[in-house]
Image (cartoon, rainbow, N blue to C red; front, top):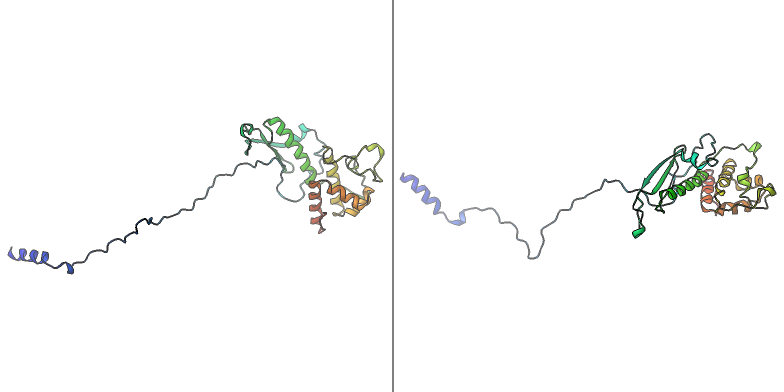
Amino acid sequence: MARALLRITRCYSSPLSSLTFPPPPPLLHRGAAPPLRFLSISSSSPSPPPSSSAATWDGPGVKGGGDGEDFLGMSDDELMGQCEMGTFKASGPGGQHRNKRESAVRLRHRPTGIIAQAVEDRSQHKNRASALSRLRTLIALRVRKPINLEDYTPPVELLQILPLKSTIRGKDVGPQIGPNNPKFAPGMQALLDLLFAVEGSVSEAAKILGLSTGAVSRLILSDDALRTAANEVRAAKGLKPLK
């Protein structure tokens, strides 16, 4: 018992210098904030549908024409029968007049995959009509129908958009149709079909149409969408764009 008491006494009588303690935590300067950790967060939520009212397609190139099927010659009901229609809420400014209901319309033409949409009106019926009109324009620009140059005769739709000085344009065709006329789309398609058949050569197309090369160039440049489509045809053949 005495030996045990002696050991305890020696332990508590040891100097503090002989004892070891863990180092204290580092001091923070006054006003300094502790280090922060930032996490990288990525959202996987799908983006909203586009709000542009313009017709769209999925890239350059010539769409299949359904074995030469005349889509532009169809009635609105017939063309709609080939489409998948979707509705959505249009985004963007507008205040009280903003499109809060699903009245915006998107059409997808099944035979060609071309997509057109309209969002600018609060009436779904009016947006449907606008989208269908834009679909016709895009079909004219993107779908090429094969033609045989050996026995080619320009269709009346093409003759209607030609300048009056064309030597193959009869008096019964009527006045020249401009880009703002709904009937310009079929003529535009026929002109692009011919340009595609002559390997993008404006001069060759001009000979067939009874016009100068400059006159055909001016006709193509009269509409921005027609110019873009014609230049895509020419680029595919290694030709310089029209300006």
